[in-house]
Length: 511
Image 1 (cartoon, helix red, strand yellow):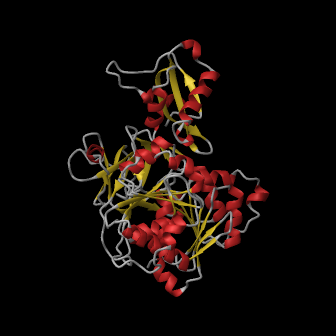
Image 2: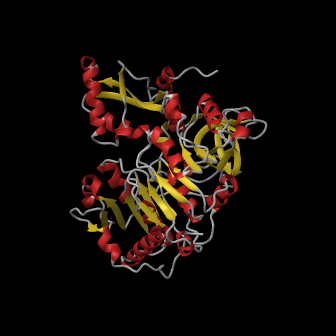
Image 3: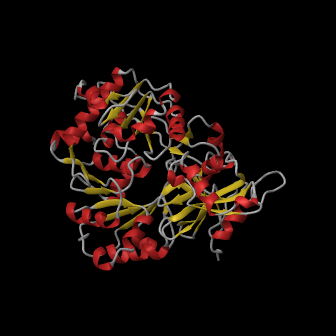
């Protein structure tokens, strides 16, 4: 199944409904729009295996752009609309995009990278034009609305990173199979969550993230209607469930927390009884929060653990979770191994690095070193996301740490090395460490601990200056919300920073 097949049967059915504006994109429009853009890719010389990138807000045509690339056999990178120019230029150039698509509201940052992305030979802008860009609407309107002759499935190449260096694109092998051929995610979603053409899927997150993008496209393969929130707010979210009789949705724990903090009379007023499946992932969910959600919505809460890399997939439903509170699930794709630093398997109950065996292969684009670092040290081809955890006797996984110190705030992955790199060159900073600290609502927030070049500078004024300095150079969510000052940071004589010693001061001791 795919949008063209759905359009042939129910052309006027809504494929996308924008929650704020109410704009509807029918399956006919989704199919025709993606066909026209696919023809434009071919006329620009792109062939299967080539690459495009797009930076859009949650836009009515976001999924049409993704489908155009997917049905053209291309790699496509959806880029965060919150990035600054340096970050954006790096990703567009690194992924080797030949086409870059954006929207007029992002013209400032998009236009600033033109000279730094010479591989791009076609730049398109929705809802207006700016220097260096052609009108998306005019360019696409000139193309046929029928499918291209050589359709085949493409793949997303989204960016992930550890704590060192720049983000890297997670690249899978193209299957080159027909558009109708279902993939692994389609099979998992169909088996676990029982969607169908009568389903209504509410997506409250930015579509450029892996899970929203992949799940929205998967649900559209089945003919479901996707309701897209331009921005999550707890009460409007609940009201949308009632308004559109939403059946399926995917959230992150921070959204649960915000809804639970609503006044009870507001929280319970919308009718959410249409929900049959609420999926969550991307960040640890506090046990009391999940208990409250199951009590409120019933045993329809589903959790999975996976990464952008797609090397494994664990799942747990409400009933099993209640019997194994705190678990992130049991493996459905890939065999889980818990290993010590030498790669030896550990027994149930012992903590170690989580590896997947027998899962799909991936590589980090242009970074064989990072790709090799994600493989097990004994050369068995097992792969890891860098998480630490343990298995119980029943095979359920519990996560206890993140080896890379990656910060997860509201379900968004933040890599502290980027902020450290920025702050370390500030003239008033002698040394800096960035890491996550507990945040009741978001799970974690970004904290910086700074050794100032002059002790006299330490204080609220320098804190504000450093935060502003970082925000001028990175997306705001990657920057510290607070800065503490120390006379000296704990470093080994070799120069290694003992970030653990700093971080542990801010986290409750684990029993």
